[in-house]
Image 1 (cartoon, rainbow, N blue to C red):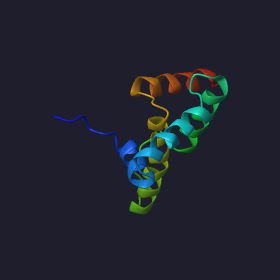
Image 2 (cartoon, one colour):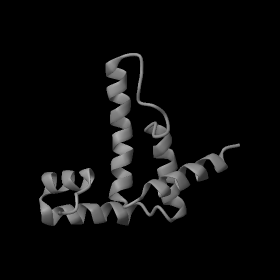
Image 3 (tube, helix red, strand yellow):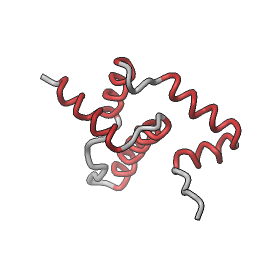
Image 4 (cartoon, rainbow, N blue to C red):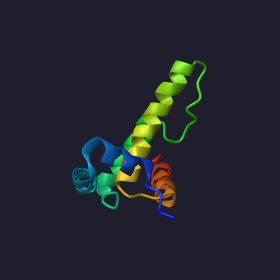
Length: 100
């Protein structure tokens, strides 16, 4: 059985073709280093801005769709950076530790 392709990677292949998709994924990793201080600051900011830690559910279906779209952008970024769920938890813990 063939290994399943992650949805973000499949999206890149569909959007850019197989050869350019790897270059796009590499560009994400070159621009945002999740192990560097600046990369962590960016990821923490985007986690907040995109509502990554709250439910997407809202009173109206339009608000719910908007919230889910924001979250999807953040999760796509995490996937392009090759981060795991454990890495995401680490990012969230750093964010919580930095709050007064």
